[in-house]
Structures are given as C-alpha cells and as structure tokens.
Image 1 (spheres, one colour):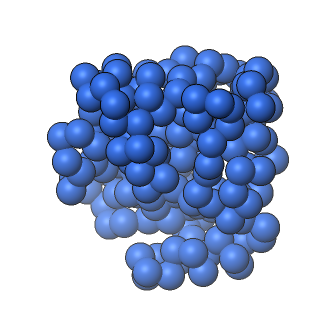
Image 2: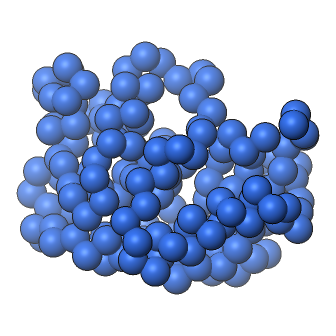
Length: 172
C-alpha cells in the first residue's frame, strides 16, 4: 500500500496508547498516558497528529482490546521496525516476543536464551529502550528477585497492570 507515517491513538485499561507506523510496520508504541493530549505531546518529535483509524488500524486496535479483555494475544504477526538495532538488540527483542503470555523470565534468563550468559544488564538496557511495549512484552521480563523496572509514564505501576492482565504470579 505504501502510505506515509500514521499515528493512531486509543484509550485502554492502562491509559491512552499511541501507535505510530508506516504500512502497519510499527515505529513506536507509547502506553500508559493519563489523557489523549499528554499522549499526543509524547509523539511531537515524530510530527504526527492522530488519524482516524482505517480498517487495518481498527483490526490492530481490536487485537489490543482483545488482549486487555484477557485473551492471550502474542502479537507475533505484528511487524515492528528493527532498523538501527544491533544484532544483540534484535536477538533480545525476538526472544522477548516469544515469551508466552502469562509467563515471565529473568533478565539473566533472557540473556542465556540469546547466547549471552552474564549479560543481564545489557538485556535490561534493551528492555528499558523498548519502543514496542506490549508487542515486545518487556513486562514479562523481571529481575531475578522479582519485579524489576519499567520505562513509561506510570513506571512499574504499568508493568504490574500488564502482568495483572495476563494473570501472572510474579515473586515480589
């Protein structure tokens, strides 16, 4: 179809969500904003204003709605833009995408999965810079002793909310 970049926004149980994409290849997701205006300001660097969703975007939004309703969506068919990532970052993102809904893994465990034993901090850095929360389910990656951190307007509160959606039992 080859259209220009677009931004769609919608409200969710964890706050407002914005998705910027081009031809449904996601460029950025921002989650957990208190209101639509705050979310739109977070996208000001992309110089995009929200568009009325077309049919394909409505289908994508419906996937998120199903996820928040408790359906175990894996989002693996959703395409993300990984241009500019190192091979290590790509491997971490892809391994994270394969963590099943409702399950967790430690930062160190994810490092082991990508063949970089001992690189838990580096995995944490990749997760902290995750441009695709929920689609790349960084909320499923936890510290060895429990929760760990989360980047976003509501911080760890959003991570806990996403874990609750998936009915996770995470040691605290």
